[in-house]
Length: 235
Image 1 (cartoon, rainbow, N blue to C red):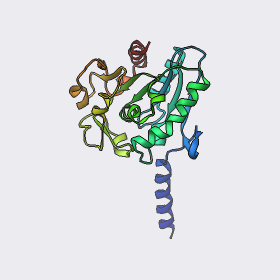
Image 2 (tube, rainbow, N blue to C red):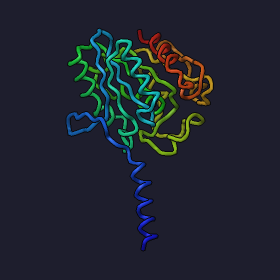
Image 3 (cartoon, helix red, strand yellow):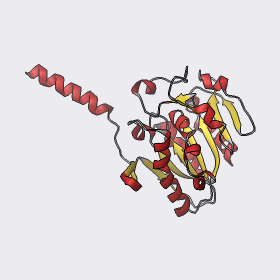
Image 4 (cartoon, one colour):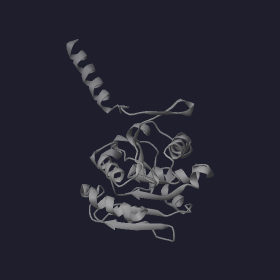
């Protein structure tokens, strides 16, 4: 009996540790709960909507949005790990965040929004413009995709969190075709040591730009370099 209780407790502990926790939430219409961080400035620079990687608010994402904020950008930051722990669709994601973006464009008196996503967040970001209404898409100034892949499942998976790079074209939703729909600049930034197949396959055109900087999938955590590259693309 004691062994069984110990086993059950251990199993519960593992399960408990794997559950994503909602520490910062924001409620929108239809009783949707979104795990977001809000960082406001009083400048006339565009609003930034940032989507984390599947690791959520790790040091990379926290330091990155802090740096953007210090450079005068107001931020809405969405925790992918929490939001996409339950599978979503591109249309559902867009429906959930449209009211959020619209509200803070209005409340913070912003005329434009810049969409920035990292890794998993970059993949799902690519689908937002084609699934938003024109009132929002007309306000998109640019989109920055940090270490994107060819495709996404719209669901955070434990195995994907443990791996990065390699073949990224096996999921349902294909990122590349979405980039051609953009009528604004889309900048994809890759690390030179990232073994992403998308880095090699992505071709540039008048709206799609590819930048290679030193580092791996996390850019060797060189936040100043990432910030400098992103700011050069959006300022």
